[in-house]
Picture 1 (spheres, rainbow, N blue to C red):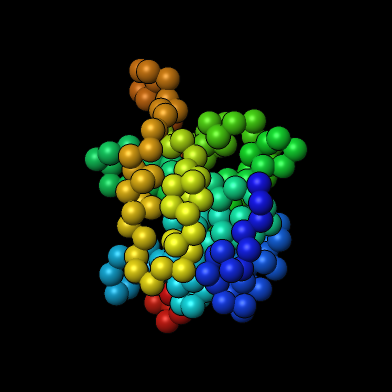
Picture 2: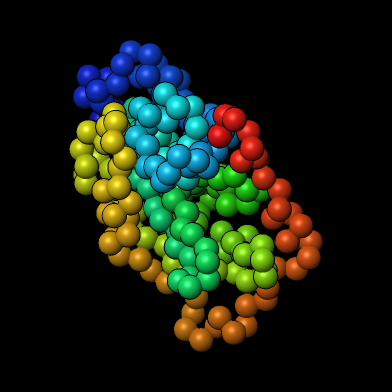
Length: 218
Protein backbone atom coordinates (compact mmCIF):
# COMPACT_ATOMS: atom_id res chain seq x y z
CA UNK A 1 0.00 0.00 0.00
CA UNK A 2 1.24 3.50 -0.81
CA UNK A 3 2.12 5.85 2.01
CA UNK A 4 -0.22 8.78 2.53
CA UNK A 5 1.60 11.96 1.52
CA UNK A 6 1.27 15.28 3.28
CA UNK A 7 -0.37 16.93 0.29
CA UNK A 8 -2.90 14.13 -0.08
CA UNK A 9 -3.67 14.17 3.64
CA UNK A 10 -4.37 17.90 3.83
CA UNK A 11 -2.30 18.14 7.00
CA UNK A 12 -0.08 21.10 7.76
CA UNK A 13 3.69 20.55 7.91
CA UNK A 14 3.56 20.56 11.70
CA UNK A 15 0.62 18.15 11.90
CA UNK A 16 2.23 15.84 9.38
CA UNK A 17 5.56 15.85 11.23
CA UNK A 18 3.84 14.97 14.52
CA UNK A 19 2.01 11.99 13.06
CA UNK A 20 4.88 10.89 10.83
CA UNK A 21 7.09 10.61 13.92
CA UNK A 22 4.68 8.01 15.29
CA UNK A 23 6.34 5.40 13.10
CA UNK A 24 5.37 2.22 14.95
CA UNK A 25 2.24 0.95 16.70
CA UNK A 26 4.03 1.26 20.04
CA UNK A 27 4.90 4.92 19.41
CA UNK A 28 1.31 5.60 18.38
CA UNK A 29 0.01 3.94 21.53
CA UNK A 30 2.46 5.84 23.72
CA UNK A 31 1.26 9.10 22.18
CA UNK A 32 -2.40 8.26 22.79
CA UNK A 33 -1.69 7.19 26.37
CA UNK A 34 0.06 10.50 27.02
CA UNK A 35 -2.77 12.78 25.89
CA UNK A 36 -5.78 13.33 28.18
CA UNK A 37 -9.01 11.40 27.77
CA UNK A 38 -11.86 13.33 26.15
CA UNK A 39 -14.83 13.25 28.53
CA UNK A 40 -16.90 15.33 26.08
CA UNK A 41 -17.73 17.90 28.75
CA UNK A 42 -19.37 20.25 26.25
CA UNK A 43 -21.28 17.54 24.40
CA UNK A 44 -20.65 14.48 22.25
CA UNK A 45 -17.75 14.69 19.81
CA UNK A 46 -16.22 12.59 17.04
CA UNK A 47 -13.15 14.71 16.38
CA UNK A 48 -10.95 14.26 13.33
CA UNK A 49 -7.22 13.57 13.74
CA UNK A 50 -6.55 17.28 13.08
CA UNK A 51 -8.87 18.27 15.92
CA UNK A 52 -7.35 15.69 18.25
CA UNK A 53 -3.92 17.19 17.60
CA UNK A 54 -5.33 20.66 18.20
CA UNK A 55 -7.36 19.84 21.32
CA UNK A 56 -4.72 17.42 22.66
CA UNK A 57 -7.27 14.90 23.95
CA UNK A 58 -9.38 12.06 22.59
CA UNK A 59 -11.73 9.22 23.38
CA UNK A 60 -11.69 5.78 21.77
CA UNK A 61 -12.94 6.37 18.22
CA UNK A 62 -11.06 9.67 17.99
CA UNK A 63 -7.87 7.94 19.06
CA UNK A 64 -8.57 5.09 16.66
CA UNK A 65 -8.84 7.48 13.71
CA UNK A 66 -5.65 9.28 14.66
CA UNK A 67 -3.85 5.93 14.97
CA UNK A 68 -5.20 4.84 11.59
CA UNK A 69 -3.87 8.04 10.03
CA UNK A 70 -0.44 7.56 11.56
CA UNK A 71 -0.29 4.00 10.23
CA UNK A 72 -1.36 5.17 6.78
CA UNK A 73 1.51 7.67 6.73
CA UNK A 74 3.79 4.65 7.15
CA UNK A 75 2.16 2.82 4.25
CA UNK A 76 -0.19 0.63 6.30
CA UNK A 77 -3.96 0.44 5.74
CA UNK A 78 -6.09 2.63 8.05
CA UNK A 79 -8.26 -0.10 9.59
CA UNK A 80 -10.57 0.37 12.55
CA UNK A 81 -12.86 -2.17 14.21
CA UNK A 82 -15.84 -1.88 16.52
CA UNK A 83 -16.22 -4.01 19.64
CA UNK A 84 -19.85 -4.06 20.64
CA UNK A 85 -21.47 -4.60 24.03
CA UNK A 86 -24.72 -6.46 24.66
CA UNK A 87 -27.72 -4.20 24.26
CA UNK A 88 -29.73 -3.20 27.29
CA UNK A 89 -26.86 -3.62 29.77
CA UNK A 90 -25.96 0.06 30.05
CA UNK A 91 -22.58 -0.48 28.43
CA UNK A 92 -21.01 1.23 25.40
CA UNK A 93 -19.03 0.08 22.36
CA UNK A 94 -15.28 0.48 21.93
CA UNK A 95 -13.30 1.20 18.75
CA UNK A 96 -9.75 0.02 18.11
CA UNK A 97 -7.21 0.33 15.29
CA UNK A 98 -5.80 -2.81 13.70
CA UNK A 99 -2.24 -3.36 12.55
CA UNK A 100 -0.34 -6.44 11.37
CA UNK A 101 3.16 -7.70 11.97
CA UNK A 102 4.41 -11.02 10.67
CA UNK A 103 0.94 -11.86 9.41
CA UNK A 104 -0.64 -11.44 12.86
CA UNK A 105 -3.00 -8.76 14.14
CA UNK A 106 -2.50 -6.38 17.03
CA UNK A 107 -4.53 -3.39 18.22
CA UNK A 108 -4.02 0.23 19.24
CA UNK A 109 -6.60 1.37 21.78
CA UNK A 110 -7.38 4.68 23.49
CA UNK A 111 -9.15 4.02 26.76
CA UNK A 112 -9.27 5.58 30.20
CA UNK A 113 -9.37 2.23 31.97
CA UNK A 114 -6.77 -0.29 33.06
CA UNK A 115 -8.18 -2.84 30.61
CA UNK A 116 -9.28 -2.85 26.94
CA UNK A 117 -5.86 -1.54 26.00
CA UNK A 118 -3.07 -2.19 23.44
CA UNK A 119 -2.68 -5.66 21.96
CA UNK A 120 0.57 -7.13 20.70
CA UNK A 121 0.54 -8.71 17.21
CA UNK A 122 -0.04 -12.35 18.14
CA UNK A 123 -3.60 -12.89 16.83
CA UNK A 124 -4.22 -14.76 13.58
CA UNK A 125 -7.59 -13.15 12.88
CA UNK A 126 -9.66 -10.13 13.98
CA UNK A 127 -11.91 -12.62 15.78
CA UNK A 128 -9.04 -13.95 17.89
CA UNK A 129 -8.08 -10.37 18.73
CA UNK A 130 -11.66 -9.47 19.71
CA UNK A 131 -11.87 -12.56 21.93
CA UNK A 132 -8.83 -11.33 23.87
CA UNK A 133 -10.98 -8.52 25.27
CA UNK A 134 -13.85 -10.71 26.49
CA UNK A 135 -12.81 -11.47 30.07
CA UNK A 136 -11.69 -7.91 30.73
CA UNK A 137 -14.96 -6.39 29.51
CA UNK A 138 -17.37 -6.19 32.43
CA UNK A 139 -19.71 -3.80 34.22
CA UNK A 140 -18.27 -2.37 37.43
CA UNK A 141 -21.78 -2.18 38.87
CA UNK A 142 -22.36 -5.94 38.91
CA UNK A 143 -19.41 -7.73 37.28
CA UNK A 144 -21.46 -8.83 34.27
CA UNK A 145 -19.38 -9.48 31.15
CA UNK A 146 -20.94 -7.78 28.15
CA UNK A 147 -18.72 -8.03 25.05
CA UNK A 148 -20.99 -9.56 22.42
CA UNK A 149 -19.62 -9.04 18.92
CA UNK A 150 -17.04 -7.36 16.69
CA UNK A 151 -17.29 -5.68 13.32
CA UNK A 152 -15.67 -6.45 10.03
CA UNK A 153 -12.62 -4.13 9.87
CA UNK A 154 -13.45 -0.80 8.22
CA UNK A 155 -10.87 0.59 5.79
CA UNK A 156 -11.12 4.37 6.19
CA UNK A 157 -9.30 5.06 2.94
CA UNK A 158 -11.62 2.91 0.83
CA UNK A 159 -14.76 4.16 2.57
CA UNK A 160 -13.99 7.87 3.08
CA UNK A 161 -10.89 8.84 1.13
CA UNK A 162 -8.89 11.51 2.97
CA UNK A 163 -11.31 14.34 3.87
CA UNK A 164 -12.04 12.89 7.32
CA UNK A 165 -8.46 13.46 8.45
CA UNK A 166 -8.79 17.24 8.64
CA UNK A 167 -12.53 17.91 8.98
CA UNK A 168 -13.56 20.53 11.53
CA UNK A 169 -17.01 18.99 11.94
CA UNK A 170 -17.69 15.83 13.93
CA UNK A 171 -17.24 12.57 12.05
CA UNK A 172 -20.59 10.99 12.83
CA UNK A 173 -20.48 9.33 9.43
CA UNK A 174 -17.59 7.14 10.54
CA UNK A 175 -19.50 5.95 13.59
CA UNK A 176 -22.52 5.28 11.39
CA UNK A 177 -20.44 3.30 8.90
CA UNK A 178 -19.09 1.16 11.73
CA UNK A 179 -22.58 0.55 13.10
CA UNK A 180 -23.89 -0.83 9.79
CA UNK A 181 -20.74 -2.84 8.99
CA UNK A 182 -21.36 -6.58 9.44
CA UNK A 183 -20.85 -7.70 13.03
CA UNK A 184 -19.98 -11.22 14.18
CA UNK A 185 -21.03 -12.78 17.48
CA UNK A 186 -18.37 -14.14 19.80
CA UNK A 187 -20.44 -16.25 22.20
CA UNK A 188 -21.43 -19.78 21.12
CA UNK A 189 -25.21 -20.10 21.07
CA UNK A 190 -26.59 -20.81 24.53
CA UNK A 191 -23.32 -20.25 26.40
CA UNK A 192 -24.07 -16.90 28.07
CA UNK A 193 -25.58 -18.82 31.00
CA UNK A 194 -22.17 -20.34 31.76
CA UNK A 195 -20.26 -17.04 31.93
CA UNK A 196 -18.81 -16.18 35.34
CA UNK A 197 -19.05 -12.61 36.58
CA UNK A 198 -15.89 -10.66 37.33
CA UNK A 199 -14.64 -11.48 40.83
CA UNK A 200 -13.84 -8.89 43.54
CA UNK A 201 -10.16 -8.68 42.53
CA UNK A 202 -11.06 -8.08 38.89
CA UNK A 203 -13.62 -5.46 39.91
CA UNK A 204 -11.00 -3.70 42.02
CA UNK A 205 -8.55 -3.66 39.10
CA UNK A 206 -11.30 -2.31 36.86
CA UNK A 207 -11.74 0.81 38.99
CA UNK A 208 -8.32 2.18 38.05
CA UNK A 209 -8.44 5.03 35.55
CA UNK A 210 -5.76 7.02 33.74
CA UNK A 211 -7.39 10.45 33.72
CA UNK A 212 -9.81 12.10 36.14
CA UNK A 213 -12.84 13.95 34.79
CA UNK A 214 -12.06 16.80 37.15
CA UNK A 215 -8.74 17.40 35.34
CA UNK A 216 -9.08 20.63 33.36
CA UNK A 217 -7.14 19.08 30.46
CA UNK A 218 -9.77 16.42 29.78
